[in-house]
Picture 1 (cartoon, rainbow, N blue to C red):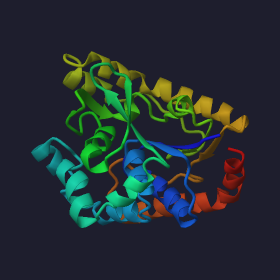
Picture 2 (picture 1 turned 180 degrees about the vertical axis):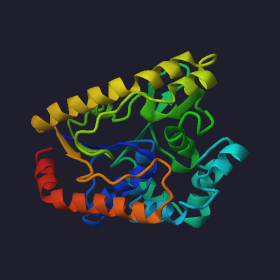
Picture 3 (picture 1 turned 90 degrees about the horizontal axis):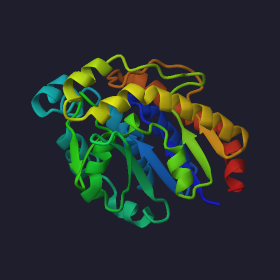
Length: 285
């Protein structure tokens, strides 16, 4: 029985996931496949290449760098998270990505990224086979409406995967991963509310991409439905959920390194605290 892992997004709040994955790497723990959404996709990249603390160094080291994320970048380039800097200069020069290790692991532990097709409003799922050539898919998965340009890849127009499928547990089950570890970035009891900026999304996109706007308006419905499904699957022993054990206020665009450190350490310690139970869950896969 194949063991999968699902990584939720959440912008800079996703550094929690980086902490979880770093503890897993410390213990040499890897599933049979990983699906990441938005920030989860970004952190999943370093996990498959087995680069412990790489995501942590990037998120804390460049949090205040205007080239990495800033309204200056948004105005000058159309992307709040600078596309060339974040997805090319960092992995190719400043915090080198281990493309060789990814190549060795991509078949043993496939990495899937989730995007949203702006023309259909539906989720599009991609398996990454060549990280250097297909990094734009990772970028698309993390490109938020209003804060990023639409990314054209493989003949499709794509944005943030969290719009259409924030927690792709159904996708992983369809792919044959009967048991899954799900790393969430919100505390237990969290329920998503309606998007307060949906009016602005309508203003910017509705004329050309009405299905995208519909997906944004309805996102909270699908998200909360998935949370209910996860609870049921957890009770059945088919899903193992890891989520923040306490609430730390972290914004999607958090720049306070002290706050990011706290969230990272929380992820690391939460993974450590549940690891023995996780191993028992994984042993039955």
